[in-house]
Image 1 (cartoon, rainbow, N blue to C red):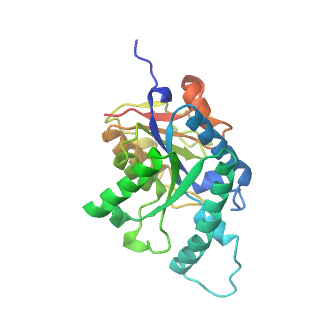
Image 2: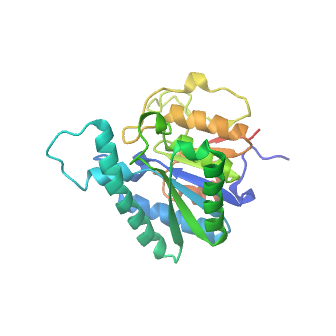
Image 3: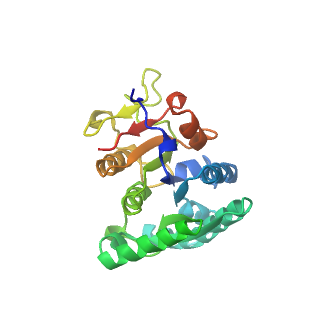
Length: 265
């Protein structure tokens, strides 16, 4: 009998996207404890035979805490300055945390044009393929220092979906600060998490067009990415990255772990 939920143990290559709201505290400071927990879980996945590509937000939040600017910067200048500084800190933190497990990482900074030009697309694909073949985890982020206005992805949700398709992943896991897509406002006790979404099923009436407090995305962005990625034949899971051991729970006990799963076409 077919099971209601697709189990992650059928997978070999997965993309994990973690948003700024998972990686930062309420004050906007990088949450090192949660970041360490994420690394612990990805190391666990590696021990169980999975190739993992990590799409990580958080660079701007890191940079904003590093430098106090005493003069006016417009939004583009702020993003360029804070992302340039923050990306260094973010990747160094990942490097130190993964090194505890003797796991190597590599930084991949990308932009929308890399997915629109065939040669750049193939080069980026080949780069991440050789990293995975040699046991190196790609840590991917948008190159915010040069990506502004029309050059930008909508957010890292969109980027993670494109990476999952580029790398022919079996699944994309979008870690948010809530458990999934609800039938109403998540703060309403009457609302329930929608556990499974069939191919072509519309949840438009449940999606609120609000943005993340710490990043550019929101549930609308995650929903759009999930629909497009599932249409390409890849499982998509939206889950709460603040829950302890969420990746392990999705793997070992998906039926009892609250999340929203988009079944692939």
